[in-house]
Length: 149
Image (cartoon, rainbow, N blue to C red; front, top):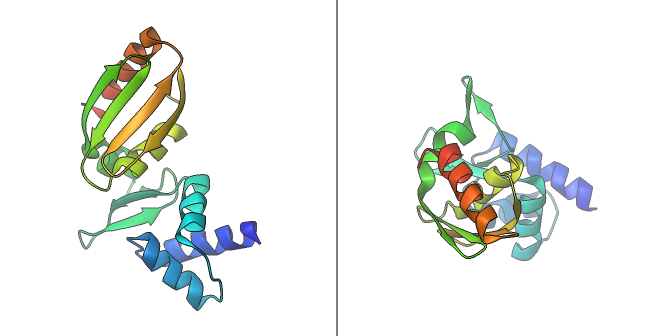
C-alpha cells in the first residue's frame, strides 16, 4: 500500500505543479486514496521531495535533485532560500524564507553534510543536530559554503 501510494505521489508531482500537501491530498483522493496530512508529510520526507519555484512563480514539489534545463533545482531555488546559519552548542540553526525550511533540510539530507546526525525543519527554521560543538562549527561552515551564505 505504502509503496503504491508513494509511486502515485511521484507520478502526480511529475505531471502537475503541486504546491501544498492539501493539493496533493486532493489529487490522491481523485485516485481513490484517502490519506491524512501526517501520512503525506511522512511520504514527502521519505521520498525526499523538495519545493522549487515553478515557471508560474508558485512553488511545487519535485523529486530530489530534479534537473531542468541543465540546472539542478538544489543549486538554484534552494540555495537562495537560506538566510543565515548559526551555531548554538551542538546545534546548527539554519534560517530560511517562510515555507522553505523543509526543502532546505531535504537538500542537506541528500548531500550528507559532514557530521550531521539529523535535522528537524519547521516553516522557516531548521535545527541540525551534530555530535559535538566543534562538529557544529564545521558543519555550519560546510552548510554556508554549500548554500553560498
